[in-house]
Image 1 (spheres, rainbow, N blue to C red):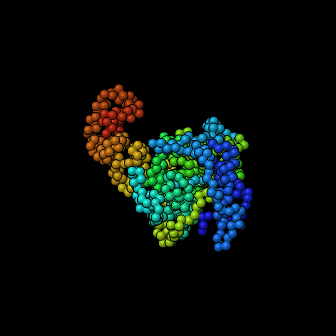
Image 2: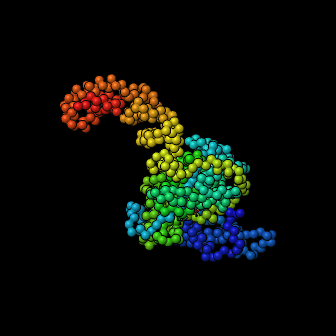
Image 3: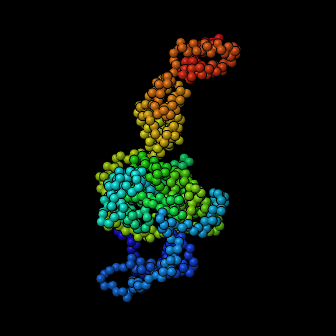
Length: 606
Ligand code: ADP
Ligand code: ZN
Ligand code: MG
């Protein structure tokens, strides 16, 4: 199979060609950020059309040994004429320039239409209600392999820039890529979990483009033949379970990371540097069908997808560090219509909140345009956290602009049935299945169960606790109401193991410490990083169950509260709780409340 569109008709249809030329030129102008006059636009249009025509001829060219130059519309040779320098200078007028500190990039000109958009104010949702949103997500997940996808460089995070590089991942000539087996296994696991068919044969392709973070000037990805296709993931929103179909999962390499000085993006940056430590790290890209119909559903899909991937242990799911990145595609259409509208793609949505907010913003922006009678452009837009808006990045190119073709350095990847069957054995239950199990068999609430299944670390801790302790409800109360609060404050680091937590729970059950003190023990334990059992030992927190001792304290209190005692004896029986409270105060919460209750009731019996 070939990545180049195979069109046997040597003369492409004129109208289709023209349309494509237009799109490409507009795209180029947007990309360059140059201020270009209509005259110049016309001139460039002609030059680019000529160029594209040649490209088309080359694509359709079949060398059967007896071709004749005269059959070409024009000779495929260029006159040797140098561009006059005035034109070059003009073209370079706005280009980055160099001084001692680095490249300077001039401020990008504002794109037409942006002002109008931003003037339009907040996310209103008035009478554009007859429109519905259609959303498809592309999620990139960084795989947790030890080494990169095509070389043995380490994937360790936080190393000195460019330390994790070698001739392969820095694009040197004369080297060959060698595929990481573990990355392949991880991609298969993802596919199996997401109900995909695993393709026995998949093909790595080169996706060609230039950017400073891509040393080879092409990314190795899978294009026409991905490793997994046709799956789905179920998500639950407002108690309704919905199937989101997955179109494909493919394996690809990550690009390097650029750091821009003085600006969040390359435009307006004073200087930019590049770190290739990330270049060549394995990713899987999971692409949905346009099945998602609200920002909330989109968020829930990513929450559940993250749960699947982290639970498989193939991705750490850290959105802030970029281990899980999401591009959101969205269009709107009149309710009831089945034809899809023109979509925009939002990049840089790197938190759950951003997924929801960027989509709400973008849907409303599209509705406003429709209401004005405008049309939506096929655009790539950037989610800007600062302004909480999407900003035009570029009008979108066609995938054919990337000239994808099978990588001649890599054999097609073929998988055998045994490997797939082997991996299938260890696929854990899906989050929704687990959730149902927690609710039905463990008596956990819906929220508690959801929290566990979307956080494998909590899930593991909780499940391990239950290996040493069987009052599930009690364990859940202490875990969700107390421990979790401190866990979150501590970046999810807990300093005592499940058996210790189970020991603590048993002390509560036996009445050795009461609930109030238990809470304090957990708090102190997190503050001091000493385990709760030691906290109890060290602080003398043990409950007072010595009947004689308590009796003495109670006598003192009843003496001091003679007036209340008379009221109690006259029938104000709810004062019992007051006396118990006083005893608890006196014993700093250590008295066993049930025992105190019993002794007081006995003493005041009339
Ligand atoms: P592109 O050619 O822009 O890469 P694809 O067809 O590969 O587009 O789809 C990319 C993502 O966009 C997929 O998740 C797909 O479901 C979604 N998508 C495609 N068309 C639309 C549309 N009209 N509205 C919303 N999402 C869409
Ligand atoms: Zn390398
Ligand atoms: Mg695509």
